[in-house]
Image (tube, rainbow, N blue to C red; front, side, top):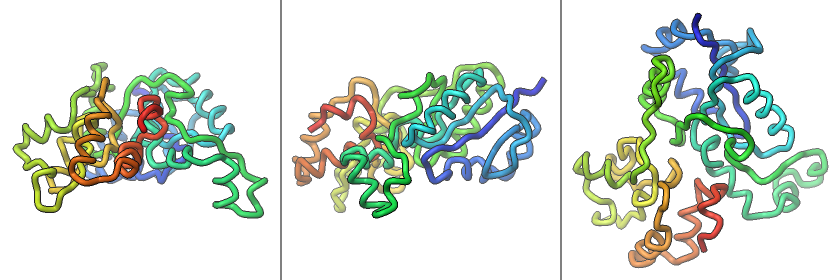
Length: 250
């Protein structure tokens, strides 16, 4: 029997699901290999049972936690689809302010009608089996993970820095360019093929951190290249403020 697959979304732009739809040439093969039972960007739900759940978005409301827990209870495999689900992404910038401040700023006099909590990745609420970390995900990474799941193989999830991929691709370090980019590659988890530095742009850290990242050295490098400490800390936390590793970085 084909595995039943569902795509779900919480607080996000749903750009990662759109990347799946952008696969175009491979989309019919994907649809033929599994039974798609729910996928809001592509179809109306046809079944409430599923084996694999791709979950996009961070959790930023109490009501979302209940829905996510139900998804986890049904799925054999849960995949965090994109940076919002994997690390909280830019949604977690709100965590620097109180809920009252956020509600007042966004909704004004209507704030009392809305429910909001600090944004967090989905693994702060339920167990996650696999991660696709980029913002948005790349089509190539999705295909690799999707194929691995169908073949019952553990998906590739590197725990080394983007700098390694830059070296393999023979990219010029953006710190050495005339533009003086501030790159997060030394502390950011690889897997994207150093996509941004490959086009001459700095890594912005959307894939989350490598384990045992040396944040103090990273901040010192940015300071040495002229970025004020406060701005360097904000740059480090832009996509990762909800991660426990980022809490003590000042």
